[in-house]
Image (cartoon, rainbow, N blue to C red; front, side, top):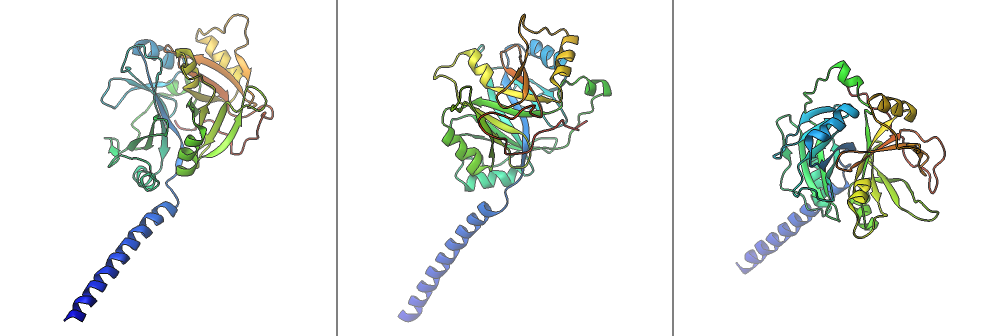
Length: 319
């Protein structure tokens, strides 16, 4: 009898060990499998103190399609194409210096990505949020507390007219950027966990690294670390750092279309600037001071500091 009991005890221990090992195997398998695709910038959400004034900027000047926001707060989305938009919401505190709420990325499988990030130690919600259009999304925080959203697109009900499509100054938001203080921590999040790779880095002075571009693993868009801000940045400094970059083919054509819509360049200053990354850019600021960094898709000269390591973006064919 003692021998039978001993055998049962040993058997139970073996089963416990086997089950524990199987659990470890499944966790390792989840991490080892090819992760869900992260294909590009989905959206960026900013705060505005005056929706009407912002609507005039994004619709009348930029030519983007306005659509009511779908969250619990009243707001508007302005679509550059069928899948990319800027969302504006009322701020928690009127006039607050930091206007950035979050940056969103598109993924092929929100639930799969949520599980993968959990397996890699990132705090994630218990489930994805499913919207009426079938889109699925979830929110996390990067190591510095910035909110990052991942969205699996659903059915698009947008049907702009041909005139609305033609009014867009840009059809592709090719990057977003925000203030970063700890590059190593952000690299762990974007590179080690999510699979982004270094696309380009450089600085205003030789040897400095003020800007780091991390490209998505399955597309051409990127997130830009803005590493140069002081410990207590001003409203204007935050507005410049926390930005989006719509792409254009020809900067001269962009400036011509802006001027046709009543925009005027600053007196005595060429608004077109050649960045150290070799690409022409033209900066606007929305009514709340958020920088809209129009940038040509392709460089016109070799970049300083480091070479590009990934494919260059192109105009979107959405719509």
